[in-house]
Image (cartoon, rainbow, N blue to C red; front, side, top):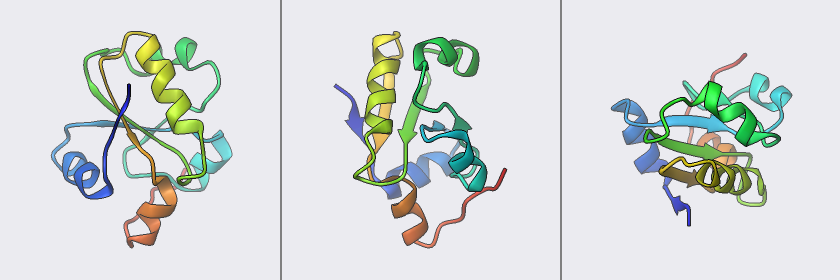
Length: 108
């Protein structure tokens, strides 16, 4: 079962460089703005893309998508666990919560 991480804990761990953050929305949404340093994983073919994007299966990986109503981050997190990743967390509130807290996004 995938554990949940709050915005405050995620931000603190990002600031310390302790997590790999992945956005699970389609590429166009990622390009419009994503959490700082996030990688684009999308939500399709996670098992096929993840090994090249996320070679360390023991790294702490945080998935997120748009908001609490978006299922992509949970689906991707489960797919990562099924592919052998051992430290997967989900930021359920996602990009809407991040922006709502006044935190910045990166473009491109």
